Image (tube, rainbow, N blue to C red):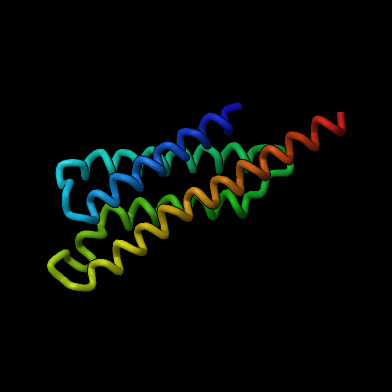
Length: 129
């Protein structure tokens, strides 16, 4: 149940973060950067909760969960430093924005994979009992 709720929190945060990111990308919402960052932090925390619960489950995959934790660290570090990698007046800053978008979308992909694995493990336990 916790994984299901956490996955929904992650999905909503990613969707809202994506919408706010598009608004920021168009240059119309400098005042919403803090909300976008908060959604990113909640997304990464949700990913980490799913990763830990999946790893601790019987038959859990520590490799996938470890990768998710590392991905969360990378997404957080990249998100917090993206303005300094290629400053915005630079015409190549869009590359940093694309990488940021792809990293954010990879979070939902790995979270969905782990949650699916967790559900299958629990279903297999229910059948075995």
